[in-house]
Length: 208
Ligand SMILES: [Mg+2]
Image 1 (cartoon, protein in one colour):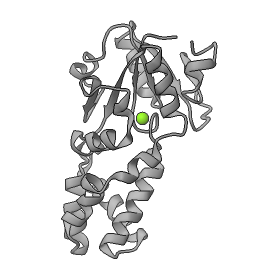
Image 2 (cartoon, rainbow, N blue to C red):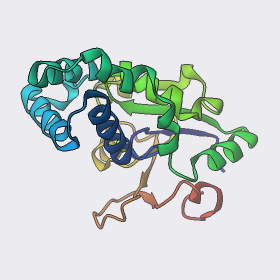
Image 3 (spheres, rainbow, N blue to C red):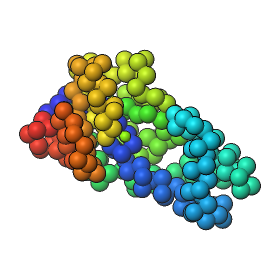
């Protein structure tokens, strides 16, 4: 078993697409807009910021407010305070796997690209901090920036769903073992190891 593992967060530990759909549904309900309006608002907000690294829930709430006249505070509640639903979107095997790794004294961290504000709330409400300490949670708007890449400890295993992250690490941090979590059964090719579920960290020979 590996001794030190860093996990990506979105689409690796948590089903981000399903979580976003739930958030759109909740925002529609609290603002009394339709889910279609909320999706349209999100698309327009993303277009307006040009660069997805600039996404923030505060900016999005203000954008929806300007667009539809809704209260930004109502929108932010869904993201920042009334957040107990977030744990429902952690992938089914995650707690069991983290528990077993933790019992085997495997050190674990998180390595996530996101605007830190909402992402810290997501991580906190996901329940994974029972196994992963805050000081091993790295969140940055661009985790491939050299100064962020440098925060990953030597010789860890990095698990991510994003091939760009993995191939970048293969190039600039060859000491790090990269492992592709291919939850959507993508046919993309990758020169490193691949798993379909984190459960393979406990069982599969190819992943050990
Ligand atoms: Mg990801």
